Length: 328
Image 1 (cartoon, one colour):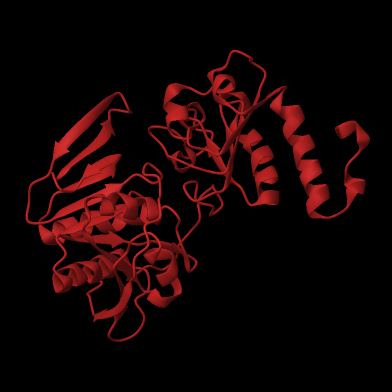
Image 2 (cartoon, one colour):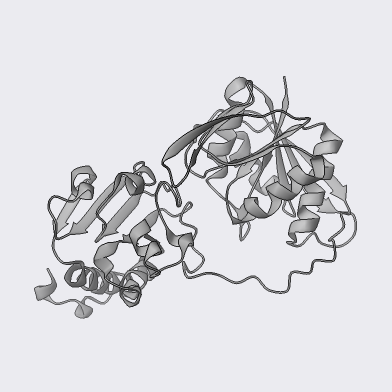
């Protein structure tokens, strides 16, 4: 039985749900799973993690002071923990944090690294990932003293497998390499992670420009939704790549996905096909998204979204006077 490490991610003290898909992928061959949690309290997450099969929950702390976010010191702390517990394989999310930490860990261990994996066989040391904007699929054999993998969020369905987790505290004092983190800024997605969102409102070519995405943000803010975009909107420079949903963007699995002016290309649909419910707003009844959605509104998004926003505002504010009968 091999020891497999899982780099766990939290946001504002809450465990990201995308961790559970990574754990599911790691436990496929009956390995012993070590969850590495930096700067957090393992006891706060023990119940949730053992429900998915974590055996050892390692809370990594500094011997002196707090272990605040710093990619150099965090990667050093995780490398120390892997060495201490004899973990030779590490899986994490291909996220902003994962992209900061996993390459540094791989370099420190002189280990091969594969990011954005969509399939993993740990027993065979093989993975699959898409390449060249999704045009090809690569099957990669990994050889080395250790192996490090970044898993694309939401590609593995999270399935519970109860176990009993032991919480272990590991203390270390890694160097920060002279790097000082002075400020952490949120991007245009307003801090809501697409891969974690329960509701997503996405815009495509039909948005007709960057300024019109404010309509989606206004609506999303009322219901705590994330705003996404198709590749066409990103390539046009209307929104940043961090908002892109699809084969070359984020793979998402929300409970509700509202696609506004999105044609629904094969590449886009590949990144959101596991959504619980898909609602399309489009003037083109032949659009691919219409063939793959649960509900279709044949209308101009510039008419529908403002109405939806007013209705949501009335509900949120518990003030029906904001809504008129003409809106229905």
